[in-house]
Structures are given as structure tokens and as C-alpha cells.
Length: 434
Image (cartoon, rainbow, N blue to C red; front, side, top):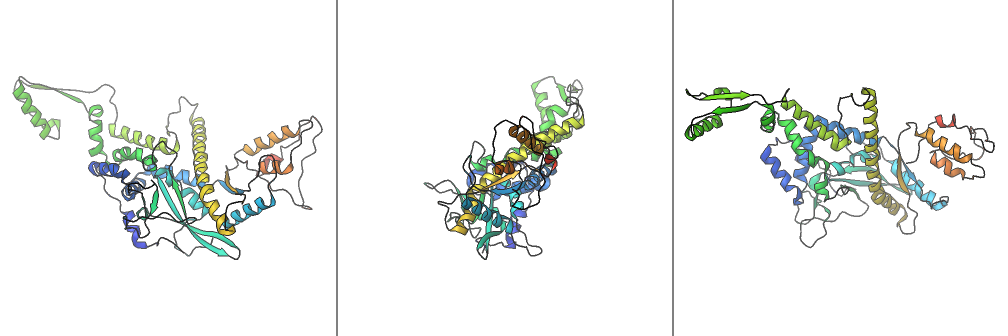
């Protein structure tokens, strides 16, 4: 049963995309620390839906994190095998995660992999909250789905002499009496990776001004670009009185060509050196590069002169983006191992004390690292006298141990001082443990 009602009417409060102008933007930015996330989330929603660069970058990273190979590993002491109990608990958690339930057509809720990507909103917006909907199937209690909680249902503590934390507002409007989130019922991802409070760590917060520049075009950017995109104007006047009159004319006129000068006065118009092209287009590129830098950790420049061509630069970008994806996945795994795993264990075993807690892990898709891992073990096993437990090698290569009597494919036995031939073995669908 849901703790927070998934009322369709609540959607309208968050889907309202406002026409943000400078004054309203300043108000929202100032109110970011007031404890109420609705305004901040509404600003983020507007930015996400109206700024193509932000939407694409965020969606790409979320999809990439969801596409990783997620699994559950039993707890094990270094240098030892997992105990039978540790394996059992890991199997229970894995079954609960992947069990899921079919959704009725048109129902909006996240599966485990959907939630893994959506949790990154905790980094981008500062907070992301999912409610776990539990079901029981015989002896297994499992998360049937994860419902993303809208921002009007939570707030930061604002009362004095109270712990600074995110609280729940069950009805979505009674902010005078917020409540702690009940245990094992919610997954809360906060941006605690920065040096400040989560409400200020939100990645998109640094992109607000760039969004305003990209969205509002000439009215916003013309003021910014005035010194660098338009020609300078030099007026020659005879006295202070004439200068004051001319200033009044200029302030009242939107266009320099509407200025009329009397005899004896002149105006000189000179271009600024280096101001070439459309300055508004240039600022749009600056805004998009700022977005790419904040979300992807890189700028997607088309300049290839210093990187050996477009292919070489594409490989550099791919490598940087992969690093960002893995870092984001590490963030998600930390939250899941601190909140979801203990919740599943408590729901199925009644406690966590004395239980060997398994760990949710991820592996990157097969990109050649499997061959490197296989070659590594080939060299290790070729060392005279070296002995390694089979399960360690199989776990490293992400392969299941073959059962007794099961048909297998085997590599040739290596002679002392000779490396085993892992060339064919490494081509199989093997994924490394990260």
C-alpha cells in the first residue's frame, strides 16, 4: 500500500512550465534555501523540457547508467569464500530486485532499472525520492515497483533546534507538521557529493543563467553582448548641457539610427576588433558547452585540429563520458546499498543484525576489458607454484561455476612456465567486475 497517494491532480502542480524572466529567476534562486523544493523543481522542469541540450545530456547519462550490468554479490571476507548464509541472502536480495510485477497498461511507475537511472535526479536537482511498493509472493517480500514522489510531498526541515534533514509531507500541503520518512519504505537520493548542502549542490543550479541566455534570445542576450557584439558609438558634443540632452535621446531611443544631431555635432561609429559573427549565436554555444561540461564532464567541440581528426576526438569524448557514467553508477550503488539492500533484508529476515549483507554491483558492457582480464589471469596462472581458487577466477570473469556433470568447454592445460591460451576464452561474453 502506498504511503503517498498517487493522485492525478497533483501532476498539474508540477507540470506547469512558467515563462521565467530575470526577476522571477532571481526570486527562485534566492528561495532555494528556504526548505521548500517546489519552486526549484519547477524551474528545473522548465529547463529540462525547454532546453534540448540539458534534456539530451541528462537522458543520455540516465540511459547509460540503466544499461549497465547490475547484479547482487554475496558478502565475503577477503581471501575467503562466501558462506552458505551469505549466498542465500544474496540470492534473496537478487530475487527480490528482479522479481517485479507486471504493470497495468498506462500505469506510471519505475522498475528497478528505471529507478537506477531516475535516481540521478538526486545529483541534478539535489534530491530524488522513490516510494517502494512492497508485495509478498509466498515467502519472498519484494519491491513490486518504485513510485517517484513529487516535490510537494517532501521538504527540508526549517524549524529551529531540529536536525537538518529531508522530511515527508504526506498530504502535499500541510508543511507546518512534516514527518520523518518511515524506514524501509522510501529510497532518497541526495546530492551529498559536493562541498555544500544538497539544495545548493544541485548540478543544474549552476546552469540557470546559461538557460536564461539560451531561452530568451535577443532580449536577454543583447544586454550581455552589447559591449562585444555591437559597434561602439562615439559622440562629439560641445558642452555638458548638450551631452545631457544627447544622453536623454539615446536612452529614449531603441536604435542608434533614430538619433538626430544638430549642426556642429558628430557621431563616430567604429567596430570592435575581433567581434565577428553573430554574438548571440556565440553565447548559445557557450551555454550549451556549459551544459555539456556540467552533465557530461566535457565539451562537445567540433574542432579536430588538435586531436588528430574527428574519429580521434570522438574516442576522447567517449572515454570521458564513460568515466562520468561509471562515477554516476557508483553514486547510485552507494544509495542502493545503504537503503534498498537493508530494506529487503529486513522485510525478509526481520533484522539486519548478524546478517551478511550482500552488495549491489554493476559492470560496464563488454568493451574489450574482458580480454584484458582473461590475459591477466593467464599470466598469473603461468607463475610457477601459483594457486588460485577457481571461484575467484570465475567471479572475476563474471562467469558461473560449472555444475557437476555439466558439459563444459575448457582451455588447454598450461605447462609449467607457459601461459595458458585464453584467446578463445576471452572472446566469450565476459564482463569484468569493477
